[in-house]
Length: 474
Ligand SMILES: [Zn+2]
Image (cartoon, rainbow, N blue to C red):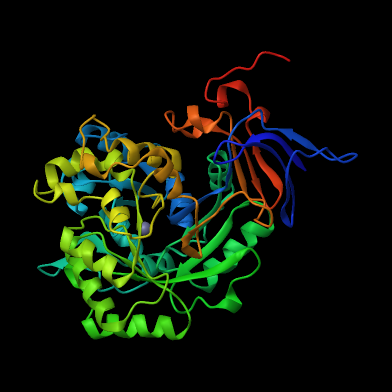
């Protein structure tokens, strides 16, 4: 296929020939007989975006669930109405935050409904709340796991960090990924790194099946546990980092963290550590200082990074994978919940780059929006949904914000470019960069190519789905 009249980064207008082998020619090119031609109309042609931190199975499950947190649900009445959605069997609700109706337990949920089993996931993804019928259902055939909170001999209905147990108990098969593949393609995303710590051979097989059927067109880099091995990662799926999920309230013994890092490195795998609090970050940096850092080792989130920790990240040569959109999506809650002295250290961006630290970004969906363009816009504005600003000196230029999604997923220190020999994974915008850079939004994406194949073409969509733009008949 020939993509004609596309702008490349730097401003040159070129024709680009692609096939499954990748980009085979760039320049002023005449179409061959019968060759399909796609007119780029002067729009910017980029390497496809890569989401460097996402949880696809959880996102698919969340999309089949009731939303019960901001911005859709904001108070006790909204929350009760959401849980009283008509239906039978399990009601699964996600995105809860205590600003809605306080810290939940079974009693609070029972006052809303005891007609069906209900489970509500906290927005952090680390906590579930059950009503009494829900508790009865999960304990019907299995004994309680350690993470099921018990007070005075009774269960409160709160379950902490027991997703594997819960999955086994509910016997749930991984959900279909097709809707997510389509949604990501519409945003120009051609690859993703799934960072779920529980990823093992079962989920690897599910990803393989969804890719083979075409439901999930994106390339997949699969992080996870040690039971995830190369032989379990079929075509189109690469083996990613060994993921360590720390929890400030229950940190593992220091020696165990060191052993985890050594084991991953011995297997030739990089290490990715979840650091959503300052304590988790400091603990992790101490562990890396002791165990050693391999090229590619990464800090996920780095949600709160004081200057001393930032200097340690730079000195150790660690990579940071951040979520710029949390400032937009959660910033108004941060402004009330996070101590004001810590607010300048939230989801820093510019400071990492100024310190020479490699920085990439991922959505953390379903815990954040899966739209990378919304995250880029937040990276340039640092504005919250209500319009306040957090850490304005951390703002990036649009070019640097875009760069967070153009790093090579397996070698984050390297930037991908549209060049001969590069994969034909491409994102075509509907306008040149000079006008796109001040209008960052997924409405810019006109077409997406993966492996030389057109997987999204906005012109195919009815006008209502084209961001409201209606093209007059030619
Ligand atoms: Zn995550």
